[in-house]
Image 1: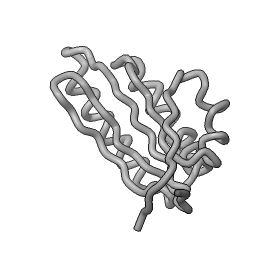
Image 2 (image 1 turned 90 degrees about the horizontal axis):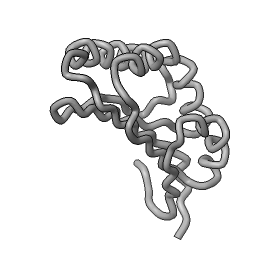
Image 3 (image 1 turned 180 degrees about the vertical axis):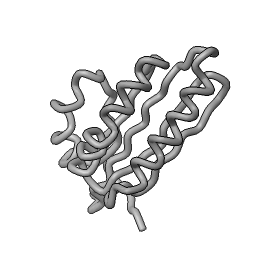
Image 4 (image 1 turned 120 degrees about the vertical axis):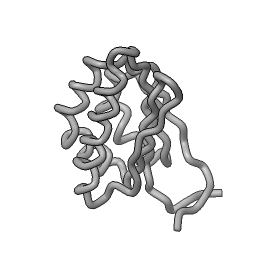
Length: 120
């Protein structure tokens, strides 16, 4: 089965030092506000389990995901000073993932290919 859905989701997981947790959560709010202005950002938010942080985010397509990374680049650099990126997943159809493999290679992500589904 195929899908016409071009949505790309990105799932970064961070381990935050106990002494940096409050600052990282405040930074998360800045990420949310910056991302809110992106027209093709479908959803965005942070969740926490102790000192583990997960950013749940989805974009209309690969191009809008890459535009987001440009938009939040300085914030991401701040985040990486406070926490370690321990896992990065990228989900989407192969036609979109192929546009992301080279630009995201430095982050060593795991790519998950969407093979069937729908989005409303």
